[in-house]
Image (cartoon, rainbow, N blue to C red):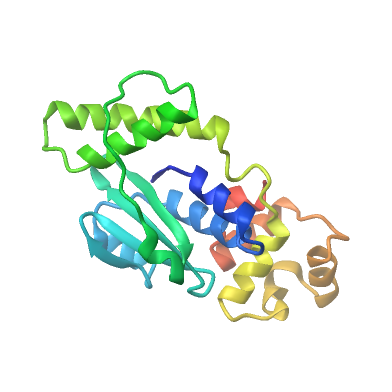
Length: 215
């Protein structure tokens, strides 16, 4: 799936200590599949809730953080509309809508493009608005990949630790990957680097997206 409006994720983790790894992990897991309906989303994220008007609420970091996203299945896009704590969940705001069909060059144009996506996300099949939607998603993804990369400073060790915690596992559950408890300790304490084989085995065992393990 294509993930857009990622700036809000970065803004949130910069203001919320301890949230970055969980958010990066969620973002990577969202980008891996190609969902076609809400059942697909639910299969990947059992705690996700469809709240109407095309939106799904994702609960991450053991339900400490909520992400609301608009699901635009026809163009394989997950459009982030809100991220915050449960207490902040009701503070989602709406925006005035504009049209934009040109390269996005600054943040003002970026926001206008996002607002336009929300206005036409349910465009009819074969309509000019659906064509516009596909172009806008491409423009937004390009702009955000340059200005708001969300994986360039991902910490593979922190992702592994967070995944173990999320799954209720212990370090010793990684023996099949590392071979010994001393090797587990050395890797998680950063005294030993991950090998390609370890990365592949961790991906298979824990389901961690490869892009987070090789960042």
